[in-house]
Amino acid sequence: MSRIQVRDGFLVLMAALWCADKSGVLPIFLLAAAVHECGHLFVIRLSGGTVHALCLTACGAVLRCSLPPSPFSRAAICLAGPAASFALAALANPLGAYRLAGASALLGLFNLLPIPPLDGGMALRHLADGRFTRLLNGIAGVSVLVLLAGGVLLWKSGFGGWLLLVGIMITGSAFRRGRRPRRTACNPHARA
Image (cartoon, one colour):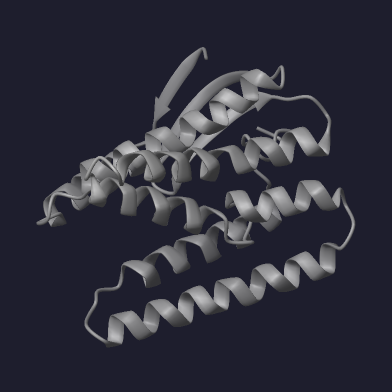
């Protein structure tokens, strides 16, 4: 990998989360996220791909890379992050690192949602290989609505608005994706 880019939005978000993190879970989630991204990196290398850059943004990590054209290879790369998350959860739990196990399992499950640009949504798109676009868009739209509704319910119940915030960010990313796709590990052929 030739370079790591850190955007201002990432730094602002990390500072805000660090200040708001009274329970000390932020470093645990960052470790879980790092292992998740390493899963993608490992399978990219395994499939003969090349990683050019890792960009940390307020919406997450974006890998800029060159990959083989196989839809199955691209889907495997997308699913490698959640697989690494579940592997970390399985290793951490017997060691008594329950917060790490929970954070990692939650990250893996969340990323399997069938909403592009999340790993689950992108894996489905690669496996469909241009077919079932209307069906996949419908599934993603319903998933976003469920995520937003869950966020509103949790916020109204006093559990905080994090899920609502995440739902809004994903919705914005999905709409932006419709205008200008970004090149990521799971979408390597988009314009940079």
